[in-house]
Amino acid sequence: MSDRVEAPFPDDFIWGAATASYQIEGAVAVDGRGPSIWDIFSHTPGKTVNGDTGDVACDHYHRWREDIGIMRELGLQAYRFSIAWPRVIPNGRGPINPAGLDFYDRLVDELLANDIQPFATLYHWDLPQALEDEGGWPHRQTADRFAEYVDAVTRRLGDRVTHWITLNEPWVAAMLGYYMGIHAPGRTSLADGLAAAHTLLLGHGQAMETITANVPAAEVGITLNLSSVYPGTDKSQDVEAARLADGTLNRWFLDPLFKGSYPEDVVRAVGDAMPEVRDGDLNRIAQPVNFLGVNYYSPQYVVRDPNGPLGVGMVDREGEHTAMGWLVQPEGLRDLLVRLNEDYGPALYVTENGAAYDDPPPTNGRVPDPRRAAYIHDHLLACDEAIRNGVPLRGYFCWSLLDNFEWAEGYSKRFGITFVDYPTEERTIKESGRWYRRVIDANGVVPV
Image (cartoon, rainbow, N blue to C red; front, side, top):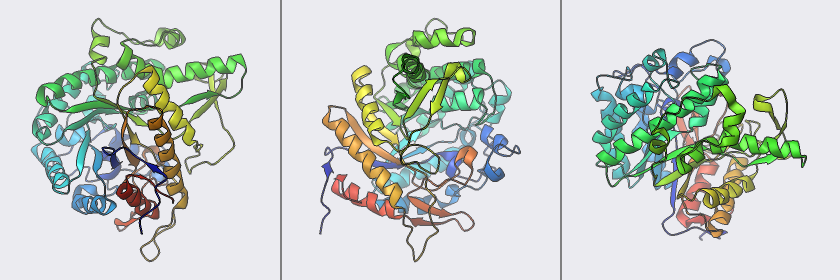
């Protein structure tokens, strides 16, 4: 008996799941891989929950065939993964490590053999530590090094990988890494954060040029973490605060990418911390992309707060929250997708969406996680609403295929639709994953 379809999706819609290299691969000193900023940061006392590191993670480097088997069991049509720069060029510059490229070669071939489209992300935060030692993302030359790495990867894999994502969440890499110090490399300078953001966007522009030269038929885009930002009250000062918060989170990246300019209200707000923008930078950043990847988890509600960054403070709202403390509000995704279509107009993929909850360990091969299934269900209904409002949404990738190393949260938070028992590395598909398989089979939302 087939499921009742609550919301059918377009025939060519792509269903997938996503991961990131440092979060799942492990094998950090195997086959010539060099250290990344996350290796150093996670080994620094006090930086991650329980001092957790990605040294072993899900051991995907050795278990990738098993993980592709899980993808096949889930019925995935596409898999979004990231390539580890320090595996390919251990020092960030100079000699290519053949063993590193060989790993991704095998991964891509096996994905294709199982009719799973590879969506390759070229940077998901694991900058080679050697480049951080030379100044990291706040220094413009890091964009040049990134382009060299992109050249090596796309020359090797471009005959088989047709979908490329240059960067994952440059806001997080820049602002949590260089301004707030919560992520690697742990710096705390607004000027460094904004300079890093500009260099990351420059790196995206240079990567676009490299990929289109090496793989002319490729579909190329960038993934941003975006949110619908709402004022916490209807007071004018809070409405203004929401506008500025939207500027720092969303428009600071969307405007240069799609309009060739930084938003003037945010430029005024950051003042002397504004990075150097040279002639030609914005033209390079604003090259047309084939798609925009959207990572959405939760909305933001903000108020005017003189003690907050740039005078903005976050406020919480009543309602369902995930284990991360994030408010569950699917209409925030609908509003965001509609806004992106109206204001910027690119083809869209939801490249990450999911939720952390405190899952029980497997019992008789089952892991019940009804809240995660409900979260994904409701956000897919929001995607359906956006599509019916004319949004060109091409696909959806749930986060994440596997429980994994969740950055500063270590192994304390589980986002996976597959449970990973870290001491044994045994995998068990959760009930949310089994439900997601039914969604894919139906090409539409089905009841949980």
